[in-house]
Image (cartoon, rainbow, N blue to C red; front, side, top):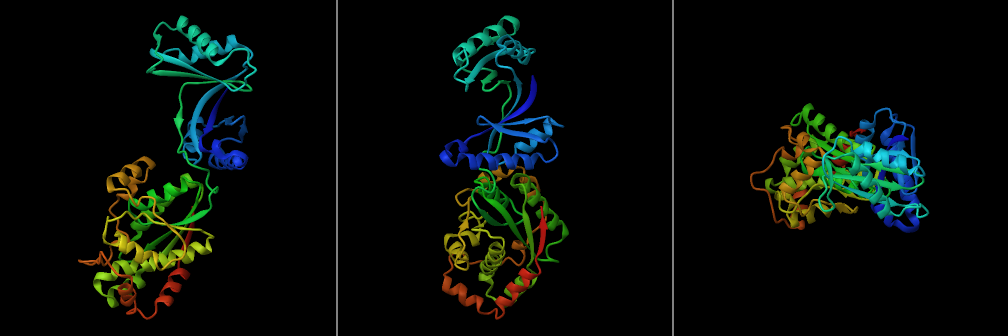
Length: 382
């Protein structure tokens, strides 16, 4: 008999002949997440098993952040041939509990002498006779006793949800424009959940944004890296560009021109990173630079596709998501990012691209400013 974590995956089952590729990639991601917490992680019979753990709680916490994991079950592994011992272990798991319960059996080994209904009936009867505080409730049980018959018998009560999605690296790479706000970390998480590896670009305007704003973004990147496994963060100095825009361009176009500069710089870094797309946290109509016309003007300066996973969310939706993934508290810290520097009183909301391009002509050294920002970027490996 041995205690272990049994990891289950969901969408990977649908992958047909490609399933082994995704299974092995998920196995590698779990091993990486566990690092030195255990050296015994195996894939067998559509389950991943984690044994010989130094700290089972820490292992569970780590695996709950691996994309591709559907659920994790702290289980007892034992010999399936000794059914009397299986019944006794089921009773031990249920000892001290009261209320309604139900037995769920899954017989993956179809050669086993008892079928699933027989297993449920036999174990349910055994537990009921020995724990008078329990009663059977098949419709809404307080406690669910699970038995899986595979190469061995696996018994468990608790099931902890994983994040779902696909293993990181199974669907290419993209670069996230990471601000210090609520929206962009959520956008990055949502795309990463589909198996996309991330890098990130953050723009700062010292001295208008200070060290605490930088630390805030680093913390957000670390929170994302807990799910992604690793993340390369590029810190791009943006003060000179913002000053040029503020001093030379029509005030109502400055925010939109700033966003276009950001997209150009992010695309240069993304292509160097072998990324196939950009990611932003924009939501239609949330601010002036996020109207449909404004977004079209922003996209016009890049050739990579731009993913906006929260485009149809309202702010309450995004906040709820941020709380669930653990980024909301950090995003809410009162340290401004460069998007709030030099904000015009009356920004354009329905710009025409020709007018935007004409407004940019007031800056005569655009390429030099962009190249200088890229060259002076700081890389932080998380």
